[in-house]
Amino acid sequence: MSKPHTTRKGSQYEGTVPTVRDRVVQTAAKIVLEPVFEADFLPCSFGFRPKRSVHDALQVLIDECWRGRRWVVETDIANCFEAIPHDRLMAAVAERVSDRALLKLLRGMLRAGVMVGGSVRRPVSGTPQGGAASPLLANVYLHRLDRAWQAGAGRGVLVRYCDDLVVCCASQAEAQAALAVLTSLLADLGLSIKAAKTRIVHLTEGGEGVDFLGFHHRWVRATGPTVRHVQFLARWPTRAAMQHVRDRVRELTSRRRLLRPVEQVVADVNRVVRGWAAFFRYGNSHLAFDKISSYVRMRLALFVAKRHKRSRAFGWWVVAFASPNRLGLIDLNGTVVAPRPFRDWRARPNAGGERRR
Image: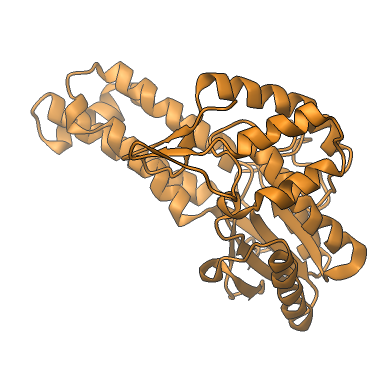
């Protein structure tokens, strides 16, 4: 029998922490169940699935905008992982799984409960957060939404990354109808949309943009003198994504780390920036990368100045001139790969060839 999960106190992440034994069991269950349900999952679903990624979902958004579907319904599901009813989730699993032992194991996972303040709370809804099986179980339940949409209940092209959703539509009326249908289908599943993050946006030159999967998407016009007639859907990191990497760099170059060698601090900063840039390089992110590069140099210059108890100008001199490679800082110049409609984003070996548009 699964043990109650403990809560993460003092963490920015809400949820539970399963025991090691439970994580092993959930991983084993996921390995068994995933191929069964992958055979049924629809192309509109991208989140937490093998051989599917965020950039695959973003490519659909670009393709549909080029087809003229530039009225976008932007929303996500409110408290998705906590709100899924256990009985209805098990009914969805039982549609494809008949093994009683496995169904009993899944019920045990769902009923494990959460240890809060020394007492066990056993909710009747929600998937086991923090466990390996939780994203798969959420996809199993939300497959009913995908299935109803494909059967003709919805209008427009649905793109779902677990609980994050956009619907690309050809007109405002179609977008409004799609939002109404989406709200109704989720209500039938015992779920609801998050009102604060729900809106209909017309992607047009000079208009608003859409935030989806870490990127801000906006319809813009090319700036080159010979391509002024070209309009396209550009994307770059959202403000939240930019602030997140700034916060991490500030933390790694803070005053409390002054006793650490500069080489170690640079290595730590490079590790964070490299991982962040590897995700956001597939976009029109050159201006964002320039800003982050400038911020990193500024923070490292301040770190060097404080470490040597010298002026800020001294820190800038060390970073910019005294070292031939800026103390080994990662260079983001030329790493951006601009997206193109109707092209697989993976099939671009010349990653540095598209710097600016």
